[in-house]
Length: 509
Image (cartoon, rainbow, N blue to C red; front, side, top):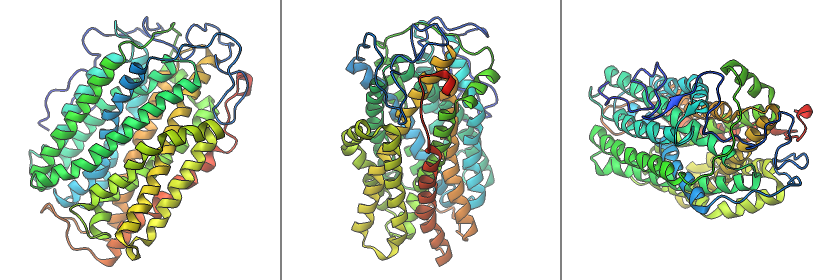
């Protein structure tokens, strides 16, 4: 691979070694807390202390505040600055899932089954890397705190390496496929060292669950915008650039610029964020993983989100194929599908916030997931529906998707704060590292599963930049992978949340 040297926070193409911290940052020795880090329950030294906002148990992640002084709301500029990081996470989480599989099958001529493996393995690597990234982040000491240096260093590395994925220095064929796999592996590693500290921040910025929900609303709104811009515009850039290898190179540069903007924006936007007292981490990574395994609400929420992420990623992976083979509109279909899927999120986020306040976060997550699954299942009728009706159903999916994302992400900081309060140790980095590993693996599983469906139904690859003629069986695989399969994954996962609850008493964990 001819990718540029990895910036601070990223390894080389093989992704074999964890990155060194950005300039001016030390990794704290084992067993020593960071001097600049904020725990999820700042100022609470006792392992037996109750969460600051846990006046009583809540089955939905919502709680009644305990007696005591209320926390000051975070400044609006911190909410907005933190949310800018979702430009990077949204772009990286969307575009590879949307375009990488068809890039391999229809531009580089890689067989569908092999392409599915090439997409899956690099992100599966993050399952191992993300907990390590969390531990390193937890132990980082710098004048910027433990998280912000990684937003800048790993974020810029992510941008450079993303552009390298689509550089195609070897043309088409097996060598080109191997290059993409190595470049994607390096990019996924850099993403781990950006995403894990980024997701860990809300639980450390405030102990108020309602405030964290507001942070998530800001974040998901920007995430929806990032997905809309990157997902809808990226295919247009490919077309404007001449399709094929050249068009994908221009698209890689466009998305890299979006990632860099998000990383720098999050770094600068959170410089005024409060920093609380320091809590010790568990003495070893094994001990931290044991804490995660022992926290049943976190385990259930994580598994649910991983499966649902796979379902959503299956939809994303099938957009180009669905637009081409089912809607017969390869030019504008992908952009219209994306606009209908993500656009509603920008409008319904305030509505979902009110639903969450009324029903509780867990119940609202279940409702949003059912809506998303129902919309996906309805798309099985797409071949006999007019295009306008198909786009309307996809918009329904978008409404459900917005709620599914915001409530899953709002429940995560509650789990982190709950775990920290029970143990008296800072767990944000490792728990969010596991979360990001699971999310990344789910997002990788989606294209992998979809590629496997294409292979099993006889999809024919091409190295011309346009799809080859397909059989009726292959077209059926395109349809089922875009509708029934994600509906089953998203809808079935909510069963894992039965009996989900957070308790203020550590003995109830």
